[in-house]
Length: 614
Image 1: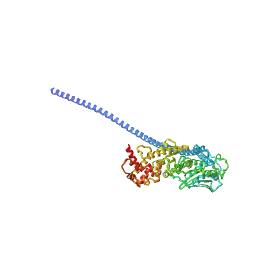
Image 2: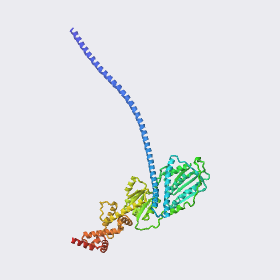
Image 3: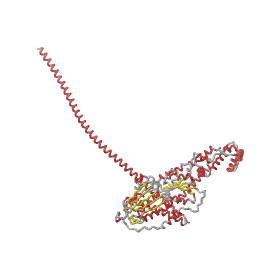
Image 4: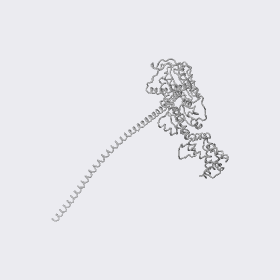
């Protein structure tokens, strides 16, 4: 029983142990089951996240592609906007240049008209020939202004498509001759071979005389503008017998048109890259528009010469009924040019002019022939007048060394600002007062003129009396400055800037003389060589600044130095003579007495006596 009881206990213990193991396994199973559920949940979550990530990546890629396309579109639009802005800027610049050029063309003839009117009203005893001259000047420039204004109106009409053709049967040779004669005098004056040719003097065409007059005027005025003196201009009318059209060509030996500009030459506001003349930029554009209204064509060819060719059709079949009108035939008066020719020949002649060497020299740098001759005519009575068209303005100023310069801003070679700056920075011409004439009346141009060194700035149209008074004021101020230098030439303080460039020049002169004070062979030529200018230019420069010639100035400097040595040194008169560059004591004494009315010995003796008495 005991053994059995023990076995039962043993079984119970084993049973408990197994139950405990079962419980442990159940707990392990429960734990592992929970872990498995968690892992399964995490796996499912990971799969979902992966799917979401792939979906998101696809969406992002799709949106990125869409954004790239949108960005490319924006960049393209941005470039287009920049291109449009650039074109707008070029257009605005072209229009600005157009109005600038036009204002210059307006203001010069207005100046001439006002000056002529002013002259007529001021003169009480005007002879008939001079009166004809002034009235002709007013008439010619009034017509010129009218043409410029009409060009503006015509341009507006062509832009708005409101210009209509009014063609009438016209003898083209007689029509061409009448306009051709208007340019003969100018061509003759400049030595230009001017010719009109045709193979059919009886040829009739249907043309709008008013519009075709403007076509001829634009082409002929351009030819004259760009053809040099002694050049050639030929107008040819060619009738092709077996064809239904006629050509009118305008050939000149001018500067030509650069090949890059040919295709743009008929566009509005376009000006050739080699064109330095004042121009509105719409003349050729209007010419093309007028020819196309006639159902014709215009072309240009330029190599060694420039040829504009107009193609016009015969009869009137190419025109609409409402484009045809009746006008009387053209009549040419053979004596039409006689009066104008006489006036042109005498327009700027000046009689009984006193060529006094004491007159001031004036250099006028201007490329408008009428204005430059008018100014010359008005100034010749009081001044010696020299002229330049702008190409040789600097060279003439350096050669003449005038007392005053009148310079236009708009010039063919280099503008007036550049010329002014060059002359003001040149030792030989820096002292010369310069009056600027310009059609540019904005503050920027005024400031630019003053910065370039201009002493006065007059805008067109200007009154001649204002110009005349400006000249007198500048010359008077120059005289005051000359008086100051003459009386203070040895007292100039480099730190007190009265007229910086002139003071600098005089100080340099004084320094050179000081360095050669004991050299009796030191000459004006040596001085000029040291300064790297000619003897004549040195003479004129010193004469303009101080009012004495350079030889007298060097002598005066030596005598002033000698006088100072007589006062402040113990050197003998002979030693002082040689120390100040005189070839002998006698020559020194003679010059000293001439200047100070006392000999060097007497001067020193008087100084000694005065010191003893004091």
